[in-house]
Length: 169
Ligand SMILES: [Zn+2]
Image (cartoon, rainbow, N blue to C red):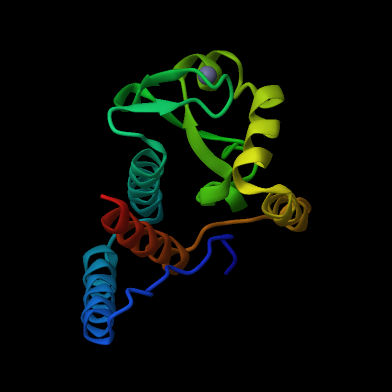
């Protein structure tokens, strides 16, 4: 499996807090696996999208507002959308890659087809050229192969973003 996300950081400093935190995260993982074990692939895709986008929205907002990755205008965070640099319909391998998804205004995402001319330099500015190159390499690696999400990878995604969402909420 390679969905391009770094592992969650468990570094909480104090040893006791750290062990409690790791225990909670393992417990959360077990609950997530149990909860989703009977779901179909389309149901898992829907849930993965929901929790992933909720995390992106929580990560990118500054209070009630957020800046569009493309046009750099500021909008109410609640009306903004999770916009992919590499479109999820074309590049399934990075549809849940957190580097590939950033908050966008509706205009850029829906009416400018992602406004990629502006998205690219601002994304490089945000994540750095090395991470951007890694993202391109991931897409290139899967370009000629048929990528399909399986159940366990999707449950991993749901588990991963559920944990990340708790960390930033
Ligand atoms: Zn915009």
